Image (cartoon, rainbow, N blue to C red; front, top):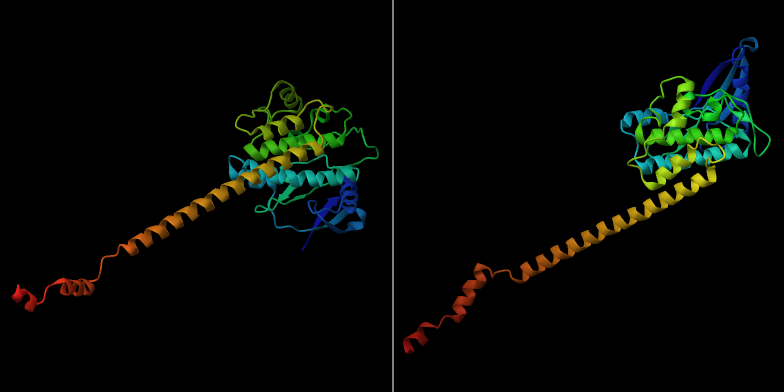
Length: 291
């Protein structure tokens, strides 16, 4: 099934072209699929035909959970997002508006679909520098909030760090998130996100992705390494736990089987057997008379 995304070309021509070009280039399991396009209404509207996925947004799923997702669930989702972002970055495209509302999530598997490439940026060099202040303020890196030139790849990684924090807490890293861009920027430089209660892996990831200095900010390969180690360790612990449960069940079954065997061996003779035993052991009348 397809859905039609109609964009006003008189108001948003760049968004139409950005999304069309990005989705034409990017074909990946974690990125929304473009089926075609068409110009409508005498050239005033552009229509993108996009594959329909009956999934809620990540934002909806987290808000339903009230306190946020488990670390394991969040790390599975993060791993998929890193895979999708790595693909588009290798094709020299940055999303530049990565938010929980722009991510569709299949709840059970944790599979994602990154959507809405209207603010995406194509770049040519391995170390791009752009001046692009569009996006969602809560997920903007400090260099974008400052309207300065920046590497859009590192902007996506900052957004990913905010998304990870949001997934785990259903809140944002800074208290002043409802204020202006300038107030938000002050919070970023003055406050440190509350990381109490998180595992060391999560703390390390958030600190690495939310470094206010772009030069210190982690890259995707570093993020994926920590995520993979976390999930492998979690899987090993799960296997050990399941193995202990199986061993405990086996011991219980053996104990029950032994108990049944003992009861069977000690089973008292039936009344018929008892009568036969008494008659066998009782002296006959003749023998008693002789006595």
